[in-house]
Length: 214
Length: 188
Length: 122
Image 1 (cartoon, chains in turn yellow, purple, green):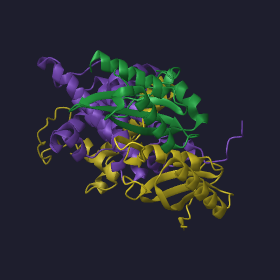
Image 2 (tube, chains in turn red, purple, green):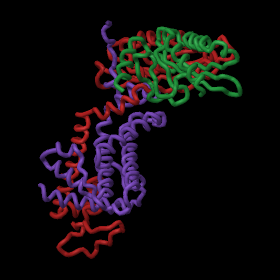
Image 3 (cartoon, helix red, strand yellow):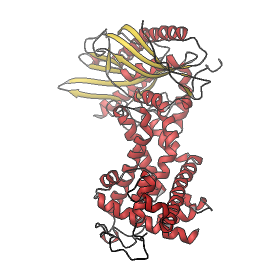
Image 4 (cartoon, one colour):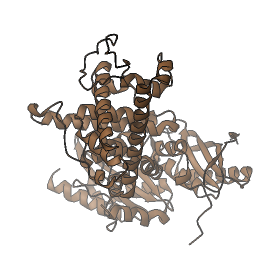
């Protein structure tokens, strides 16, 4: 094993001329062996005391580096004032998306709602139903035209123990009401995918990938 | 007050669902993601920049960029590595900007000795010594080491982020490794 | 904007903010970023520049208003009421004016205190 403290950015010279008391393998070679689990010199590493010691030290250094990263993360999580500051700027952000026309009494008016406002509203209406948490929520159709036929696409995470058909019905009804009340688009249908079923609001169970269409 | 509905809480949702909601404009879902990975990003950025103020800037820039570009992320399950990658890039950019403003004489190869505040709290078991050794490394070597060992980037990815050749990355990593190994013998 | 127009813009802001179901105004031209604040006055955004955009284009007065409303008021009729309020406030200048009104967020009344609290922290 050789020390590379004096190395430069230039490619290092071949190691054929390593001193006799040195087995000629670099920390870099050992490091790559540790990382990939394979090396043309694997057999040598297995029986060279110098390389064994080098590997052991590299492992300790790797472990320490990982633990340092974990400590850094924990320290940052323990005092999250810094994150609060950052998030307070983002919290009330909205996405506009497309512009949904609203009919007007005056021909000189240009009245509209943002797609983002309608999507957020549908999402919170869905979330309000017991056992359902909305994932994706998209509007399909040329919603920038008055009264455009529109489909709502939803993917949902359901809580285990709820009857899926009842959930889907309740969701479709609620979305239909909100959509009818707050837009002047024509609702063609609500396409609901139950993407996942979760136990107790904690960990994730394998999703059944059920597709439900009206 | 009605009792809270029995639902899957946002905190329990997997990254994929949080990404979908955040892409649709749900700031609460984005906030859960930010809390989930913000501390990891901040630690990473702190090691890369050597300063908490720069680290906070890097994380803030990362989150704003992420919010604006979430729709480009096709697979929400890789959001963690996506965020770490953006954060690494932003951290390097911040260091570069700072250096471009600094006197040309104080450039490459000079270790910046400003310790990160958190390092004082990482007591015992070699961690504090490693933290000190890392901070004493020339910034160019430390960045390579942190990008590789904490960020999990390949030589090619590091080369691209630092705008240097893969061979230079190899050389800097070798020197960082050798120094850290030598230091480690002292404190073990 | 002339002092005259600034005064008119302030009047429109106040009138729109007083419409039942309106909970906030957004700056008319900037991106929708970091704009909600100051909950007490029911005008959520006060970012220096006015919240109602007024400008003249080839002799035509154009008014821009972007706002947040509560979900207990149907969105489209709320938008129309805001447009009507703008026209009323414009008075004789309403003739030939273009009024652009956009509903940018629909907030459940129950969520309002949370929004206000978050805004108050700034």
